[in-house]
Each structure stands twice: as structure tokens, then as C-alpha cells.
Image (cartoon, rainbow, N blue to C red; front, top):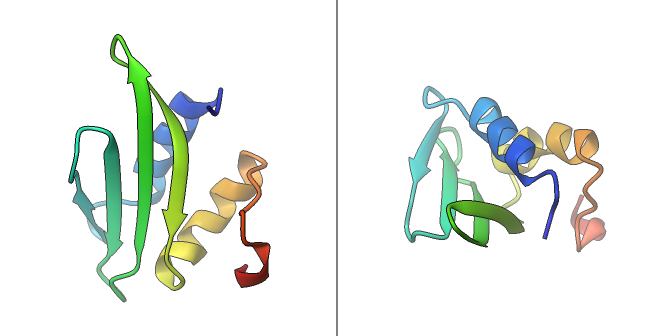
Length: 86
């Protein structure tokens, strides 16, 4: 699990404002932001106990979602699993 999860979660909320993104909460352990521009999605999965949730996975579709997430990847030194697509 990612130890900077709280900071990453705060950055995600800042990076995906409601004016540009639809927020979806499909399950208790997930959050998703859908681009109003092209429908691409950033999906974040959480796990945790005692109200402390940690980011365990992020899934991103190519498009506006990828472009919006790039700065966060750099700031948090995250490496995409499939770098060929980036």
C-alpha cells in the first residue's frame, strides 16, 4: 500500500474539479473521476480498516484522464505498470 495515500487522495480531489470531471463512487472502496471532455476515467481503489484507507491501485484510461494524472505521477514518483502506453 502507498504510504503517501492521504496526500495523493487530496491531490486527486484538487486535480479533478467538478467543473471538468464527474465524480463517481461506485463502491465503498473506490472512487472514479470521469472527464466531461472525452469520458476517460481515473479509477482509484482503496483498502483499509478503522476509517484509514490507503490507495492500492489506480487505473487510468487514455485521454484527458491520462493527461490530468501525469503531474501527480511525477509529484508522487509513481511508475505506471504499463509504461509503453505513457
